[in-house]
Every structure is written in structure tokens, then in C-alpha cells.
Amino acid sequence: MDWHRCAAFGIRLAISSLLALLFAGPLLASDCIPIHEAGHHIGETKCVTGKVLRVSVGIKGVHFLNFCEDQMACPFTVVIFSSGLKDVGDVRRLEGRTIEIHGAVKFYDGRSEIILNRISQITGGAAMIPPLPKNYDVENRGHFSAGRLRPAKKPAKVKAKPPATATYGNDVEGEDPQ
View 1: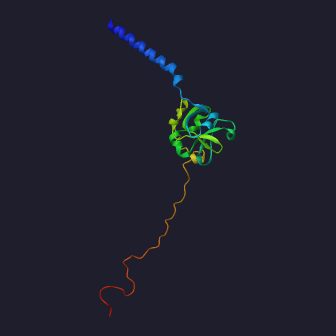
View 2: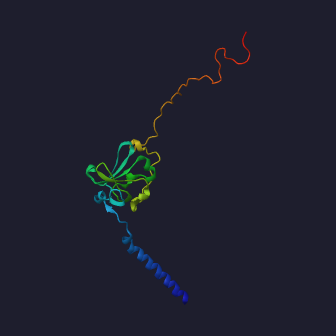
View 3: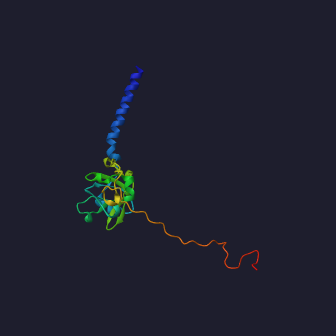
């Protein structure tokens, strides 16, 4: 009979723990700010939330997550440099998703931005994006290419220097010529 009480207590404890987690979830949720408030937090490390409307590619493979229809009028953007894409993944899959991004809010080109370097900066369901395809060419804006063949350069000709121990003229040590 004693074990019945222990089992019942264990079940009640498990159920109460589960309920506490379910109801405490919204209380423990991150304090993310909307994109239009990000400009008030320049220099701070914050969580910013918004719906990605478009992913655009700029010069040299820099990717931008745009949260507004008009990119130039938008108060906030997320920047992913081509060097960070391998650590972040296929950001094109974030289009249409609401994301929470954590990082230092910076001011650049008239608006606030967060630079995305790691996938761990994105939380929520959007954090499950696949890695980049192995043959994705970042600087070629997604066109898959193995590159182009170029002929090898010929090695540069180097002028030979005379050895430092060389002798010139009649400065030879030893016997004098007669």
C-alpha cells in the first residue's frame, strides 16, 4: 500500500511540473522588441522580433533579411555576410517566417541592424533552417557553379645573383700568377 502512495505522488509531481512549464512558458519568454523599436536600443544587445518578408542578396554575397516591403524605408534589417553563411545556414528559408534574433543592435546607413554570424542568434521555430547546399556559390548570388578553369600562371623569372664567395679579377688568395 505504501508504494501506491509513492506512485501517486510521483504522478502528481510530474503532472504539476508539466503544467508549471506550460503556463510559465509565456512568463519565461524572451523580452524581444519589435523592429520599429530597435532604433531606440543602439549599442545594446537585444532580441528583435519580426516577420521576414524578403531575403535579398547584395554585393559580394551579403544577404539581407528585410522586414518591410520598402527596404530603404524599413527601420531595421539583419545582415549576413558571405563569410558567415556557412555558420548560419540557408537564410533564404527564413522568408515568410517570424523570427527572434539576438545580437548587438548597430546603426548603419540610417537604420538599425543586427549582424547574424551564428544560427544560435535565431530562436524559435526559425532556428531550424538547413545548411547551405554544398555547391552554393555565395558571390554568384545562388547560381550553382564549380567555378571556371583558368590556365596556370607561369612562374616569375628570378635573376640569378652571383654567390657571395665569388672572386673577381686577380684577387685570388694563394699563389700569385707569374
